[in-house]
Amino acid sequence: MSRCSGIRYTEGYEETQMKPASRFVRYDPGSDTLYIVAGRGIEEEFVEVAPGVNVELNAQGDVIGIEILRASKFFKPVAKPLYRQMQLAS
Image 1: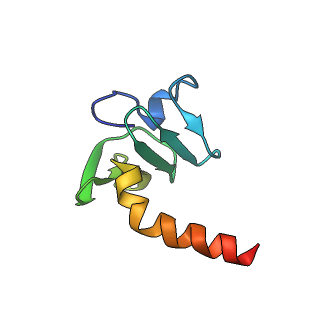
Image 2: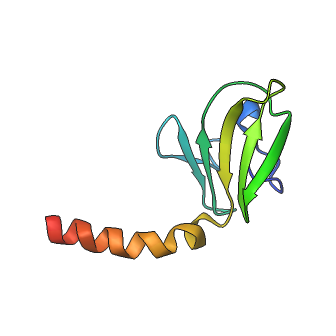
Image 3: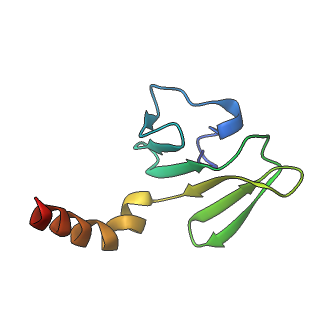
């Protein structure tokens, strides 16, 4: 996942470090990184498409994952309004 942690999709996730939200979305609270699995393969390179948002590519240039660093900060503007909407709906 995170460049610092050395954990990548292709290496598998250590369940002690990762909290799987689903088969395709992983969150690492230690590094505050959200990882979205988009395909299979070995990461050949990554492209930073926005500050803290990396798209991981295989050797053919296909997207195999999306990594969002500092995920809690990234989603903070969306989280509160979404939570309020959920409270109103229930």
